[in-house]
Image (cartoon, rainbow over all chains, first blue to last red; front, side):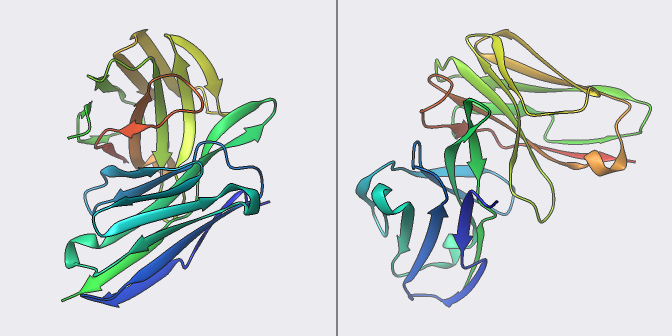
Length: 111
Length: 113
């Protein structure tokens, strides 16, 4: 079954709008990270957040490990925020933990 | 700049060719990873090396052969690939394998003709 599920799959915003991206886990949260992949394929670390809340400028993230989800908040979005946002966690598989990515949220911010 | 570099950035190869992808990390990490990202699919873990030892092979076909000569360098040797192997290949590193924040290189975009 799906172990790391992201929503929404696609999001279109007008510059200046706020948004919330969600990541659900079917197993316990172990090593949660949020990434932004730019149009050239580079994955940029946004947050390492297995639990709690962190903020970095216009971005913030909250992980509620007991309820197996994490949220990424983008405030006052800018065109440079466009790209794909991934969450990832270590998922138990055959006695070991495998880094597993969600399918991503594709964000387009229009000027 | 994440501290992880990959070469080449783009590669076109025929199905009978042999080529290698290179990854180098300048972060002092001990674990390195290869991922495959195909169009419309999530990133798939291929291999994990921890302190130069392979700790994960995620059922990858033998036409992909990894090599980790030291903790800073990781190679992916390619031979007799198929067109469906065309993808973005991403390298990552972390302080140790498992339970650590990963940092990614810019990727090699591979096209198999």
